[in-house]
Length: 202
Image (cartoon, rainbow, N blue to C red; front, side, top):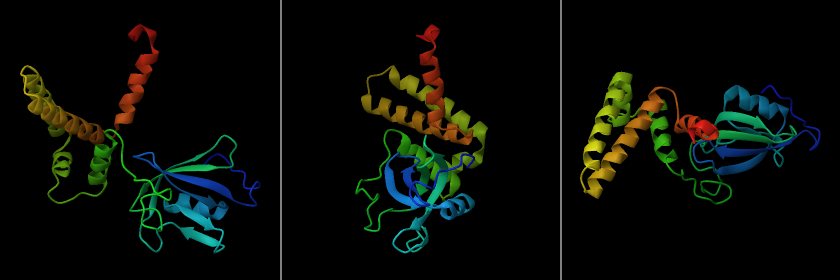
């Protein structure tokens, strides 16, 4: 991390908020010192400084429910951290998804992106998503085209169930295509937001 943190305000510690990169749910709050931050950056797994045990503590070291680091962001005063992570299981020692007793569920299409991302990083035998991704970009793009045509055909009729199913098929294959190209739905959202800010497009 390029920005230097201020560890002096809390006697060598900074608070660290951990957020699920997919759901945006706040998972927990811990504290880091310079050593635990360096270990976190080096191993890409969240490591705190335990104030009660007076030692470094990697989240998941006993349960296996590690927090895999996606990004580390300092706040405007450089005395607090926000870590976006992928949790490898329940985060709270009670077995709850988060330390705030919230269900860690994705909102909107994030749940589907999370599934596709998981299959991409950890291929599963028999997975249709993995079959598509391994077939190559041309095959994925072809499927998007086929599903788009099928949706157009169903749009001309009045069968609500068939139309919605074709719409779901198209959306799924579209998200797989984005993933295959190394993008996410948020990247497309940024383009649309940019266009919305362009008065000539309104």
